[in-house]
Length: 479
Image (tube, rainbow, N blue to C red; front, side, top):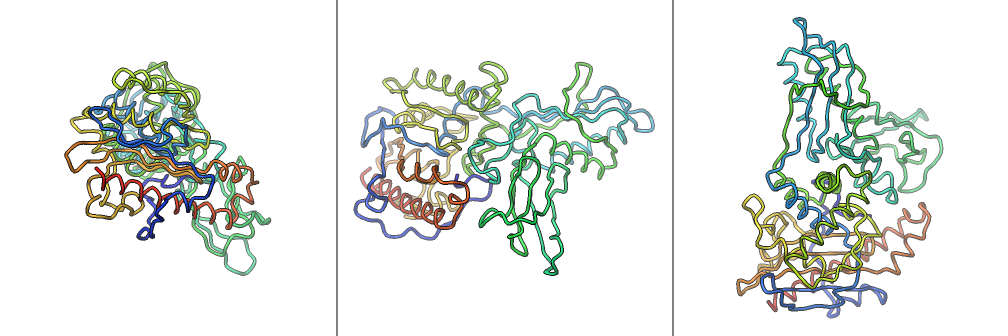
């Protein structure tokens, strides 16, 4: 499980429970804790424990992605979504050529943006297209999921495409009448890409909606009423289908979309630019959205060696660049063990060390991205239920600026501490239980999704968060 992965879906928890004197006790005998606290200016180590041990970074890996992208693309970079045409509409509003929706990798593209593009085309006189309607997602690799090892049904694990809208998630609602008839399925939005059908076979507890590789199935054991957000598997096609539907509402008749690329003879009919990258980074880090990080990372990696074919290759290119860039400022960092298979941290195989992440934070400290310090792009304690509503003390409010990361049996918190003496310290804290994670991964899908297994994992996460809070509040008291 990757926690806090969907934009605007931050989990909320009650006030933290009392913390044991020894935070490791509640985590079990196989738990590991690694951390480092360093003066951001001088590099002096204030506190450290097993700081060179490779640990699962989870979503704290997003910091490495965003720092790299801000440096490579620049804080003012804007993603462009374009509509191209191979001709102009005639007096009756008919385009005899092709219309192409070309993706620019905008991770924050919305249905409102697509409708706005359609209305702009209508304002230019377009009413119908008798040629082809193409969607071009060739700028970046098109993938059915961020990580194929993660559950196919998890909305935090959507498909990836240069044409992505609404974070590549859609909604399935169902209702049974109780008379034995097939359930009524409601798809939002109702696109051909979101194929779903009822199945007369049970699919197991917690698995009422499944992806069979071609369509979504609703198990016979699903409740009478249900409502699930699901990941989009073919984002480029789904985005094009949505654009066609919205264009019809604007009075434009488009053919069924086909994959293709914009020809050299096409001209830009209209386009929309996304937010500046600094704002994209702020939102992506605050809400810990996986798709945002993947699209940002892929776009930045294109500058290093052209379009990457896989997330693994893209992350490797960006990691190589980052190690050199950080090494030019922060010396004596041991980069052995650094392994990021993607840009979001959605991987049980990813590894970083506390010292390595602290070096990235030191590199970013003091730099300005669009005039803003990197710290200001991170969530801070005491506001907007940050950090799952932890660190709710007057001493912590505004003094912790950090990014969380959570997987089953792995926790991370990395960022900056504002000392009472006015000095800034960078810190990286990781907690994991490799033995418990190996046992979890060894289970089959049904057992892994079982209520007892999930409850045990969530209990461990709660204990890790209490330990995490105790350690960081202890640092604040000391510094």
